[in-house]
Image (cartoon, rainbow, N blue to C red):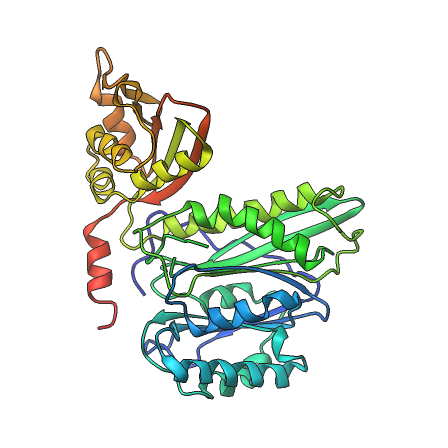
Length: 409
């Protein structure tokens, strides 16, 4: 494994047991390194599921399968492998999915359309059809309510640390828990990165309402990050609700407690998404990009992503260079309404340009000091309206090139 990212949290958070969820993770031989590469979760009968998937037109076979069964709204187990994406593998990939689903359904005694799967890793290399299915019985014996760290390790590829997050919420007299794990480091520009996320709650909530909460949370989190501007074939975020917290069932988004549950889901998703950015391949700085004054929130978001995805902006931050002209460039190329003579740019709390000009008496020293830190903030105010958006990214260093030049070798 590569050296741990300098932006990583100090430790994997303690994730509590969630009623109706058991997890396990272990090596199954897909990675030559011998590291963990298989994750399984067993879920209580009646568990509701919601999902969000890549909009890539070249999706993996597991993504196709999950999309097909998601309207059923129920899940009994999740099977996830790393080390191989099972993408661009033709009919062989479909056969691997079929064998994996059938094996899990038999093992856990559930219908095939309640088995969710995901894969991440190298594209274009088939896995023998029954390989993953053959590893499930042994892994099922490891299932536990608190094996979250092993589970998180089982889905890592170029990640340098396992990612987890947890929050609680109150629905009436019941406290509900939301916990999740994710993986991602490169090929990150979600459009729903190689990114996978699995979130679990014990709340009682039907699948359609759960889906509405997840869709909103994904837009505010996983779809608001970028490492390198590349969208994966395999992006998958799944949210499971076992219904065992004892709360009154949330039948609509307007029910009392729905806002509290949404806030917990969103915070877990945002925590995981930001950890993905902090583990960006070769990253040395975490960057928040805030855009205000746009004609709409959607326009602001597109401008923010233009800044966050710019190699010139990202390399300037890596070099601790207060080159605000590159931010101007990224605003201008976004294809969104902008006026050069109303534009203002800041680094941290320091405005460097306003009304299309450098600020009077501009002093680069405090800006340079801000750029020497690990957490960097870039702001752009377009001066056109009330639209605003925030996205998160990382810098672009030689480390990114080294990791991806050697990825298969």
